Image 1 (tube, rainbow over the protein chains, first blue to last red):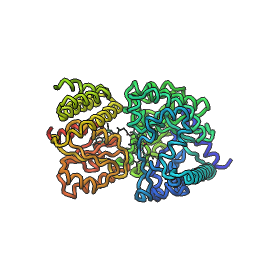
Image 2: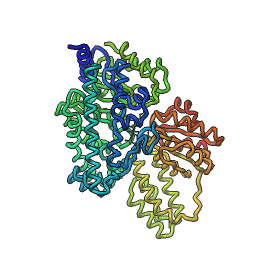
Image 3: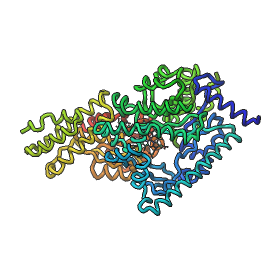
Image 4: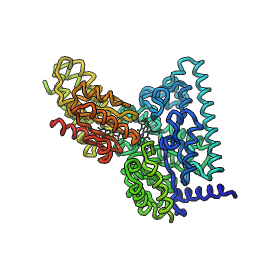
Length: 388
Length: 209
Ligand code: B12
């Protein structure tokens, strides 16, 4: 076996052992770096949103310079060109509507109306194609342009996926390293609440048309399981990325959480687990009040990521049955010193990682504000102090 | 005459949209002064804010009450023309340039309005000039800024510097999920808040009411 293959296997074993709540040779590092990578590699945000080779190059640069266990990034989840091809009304990109080094913007709205529920529930795919897409894309004004835009958009998507697959191969062969997850999905409540109904819409629906909302959430369970497996291309080695939004405290009151948020999210996670697919439960914000419920999930079926959740309680309630990750505060990475960052990581290693089942990461997505020396301190501390 | 609107405040606090709207309509038909109804609704919003601060209400209740309030005000506003609303003072609010997270900012604005302030909401992705112009134009003693992205905290510092350089006599309040004492110091703000009711607390200090 080549050196890189050995390295790859070592890193993968370390990562998987931790996800299986075991004790690897040392604490693994997975960094959720986004725009930080663009700044570090010297690209503008316009470049990474529009030129996928540069987007991927950001990750290459970082793994050449730092010893981490999984590839961070690439920084942009988006491909501006696809959205331009269809004339997306809900996004603004650097270099088009925005200056060339500005973060993309999402315009939240109730793109789906309360009146749309019946059609959505009857056939969501049909409703999306015939009603939603024309509503939110300027290119759908006439069928001729609509067809062309879909072909252009799909071609762009395929090219991007192809480039990412190529990059994946290169990362494995040349650097002995793999991406931190494969595939992506959402909580059904977030599918509706983030994109379709918007926060105001879904909050009103819980009061005004709860039955329709529940029916729509149910319809999304199978869809979100399928979407996760399809975007992972069937892979079950790496976890699936699931950024969780509207279930954090204090969005919903406890009864609403139990009734609207949790049942269908639980079904999606269990459904994925039946396929052998683990979920990276990327719990954005504070999830402390819900830890007991989350503990109902099958052992090892998730990696619970801690942003602002109380880490001590998370360890108490979920530890031993689920791998935990994260919790290095983003403000510390920006305003702190390398010593402070190092101390924080040591504390996590002593108190949380001590008996295995832990992956080092920041609490939230790391943007351009984080200091390079602080990210370095995080990595070096884990490499040295995180050895079991 | 006032009995048409008895229970208006409670209906709002209980999030009963149909009851609130029925009462407002009945009140208007019976010739109740629209301003009296606005005052009752505002008292309801204050109560809702208090319940949120005590952990009895969640964002869902705040948002629902905001929507009910909007619908009620749509009925009342046409009748309010010519009536001088008495405000406790002017507050300019917005989400800083580069950031589009507005759910938190909207809730803060809503509670401030509910507490009787005149809130000038500049929306999201707001640059320094827009904040400065609005503070000048409204002679606002308080400028509130929301920031969720840590990457936009540095630009916020620049905005605050520009506000100070413009020589405006205004207190600056910042808020958001990753905002703390350290961020406040770094950005040169006067106050910081991490929950919606912090906005009302600071406003009370600044306006003494
Ligand atoms: C919903 C959400 C979104 C929605 C926003 C919709 C909208 N219309 O606002 C969408 C999906 C569009 C979105 C987009 C993005 N998001 Co976002 N988002 C969130 C999420 C899940 C919730 C934020 C929220 O609305 N909370 C509810 C409100 C009510 O709470 P709040 O905003 O904190 O406000 C309260 C207090 O902070 C305070 N407050 C707020 N403002 C003010 C102002 C004053 C004056 C006062 C006194 C108080 C105060 O009072 C409020 C009420 O109690 C958070 C994670 C989290 N749970 O916090 C991530 C989060 C903020 N997002 C994040 C990121 C990275 C992004 C993206 C860059 C994602 C990407 N890479 O694709 C984009 C950014 C786009 C842009 N240019 O801004 C990160 C930021 C990380 C960082 N380093 O800063 C977070 C923290 C997630 C994470 N853990 O990584 N997001």
